[in-house]
Length: 311
Image (cartoon, rainbow, N blue to C red):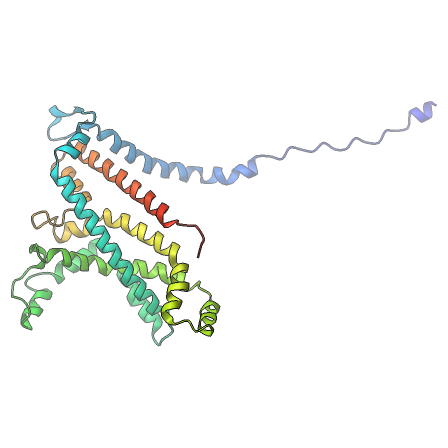
């Protein structure tokens, strides 16, 4: 009996150790410093703008500084006709620029997507303007539009126009002039994104369409465009935001003139803050512009059904 009792009991199964949560949290811990820095660089300016939009803040007139409440916003919508004028021109500028850039960018992408001799060189020439900085682009077009040494001088030599004509100081020609200047740099952006998406279209679809007797136009309408939907929606949204906030080109070429003909809302904000030193009112204008952009972007994505996957 004692010997039977002394028989060793089978060893208990080893306890399972709790899976450590550290490996799962490690990726988040690694990116946390960069995420916090980005949050600080983004959140602090945004919060500062919202704060100063409720203040009267002008460093040149410190005795007037203080809490203003919603007075700046009331002034924007009731006592500032320049706000509506610049907002209307901003909408016109974005609509014309983005529409033309999309049209020409799509055409260029379709062309350089074809197989032909020197295609690599052609693609490099098409994409090269996008590699040029905004300041350098402005400098190039300032020289091209110079009334003494620019394009108008050579056109006058051929009997087209008059010597000394300045397209940037004439209210009838300034808008087409700045449109062309910005098209030169904006079209390659659409061409790059659309070409990248074009190269992912299966050639079997086009071959099957040809077998069924579909023309090139029908292939483009029923195969190419549906496949490019998301790329077009994303590129137009990004470009619309960038064009709305465009300051460097217009500021360098026209400064918002002549007679305020090319003053966008961001350029008006820049003049109000930098030239007039009215940072409180400029912050209120910035807040309104932010809300307008956010609302328009949400509506556009909603209506376009971006990411729906119905290609």
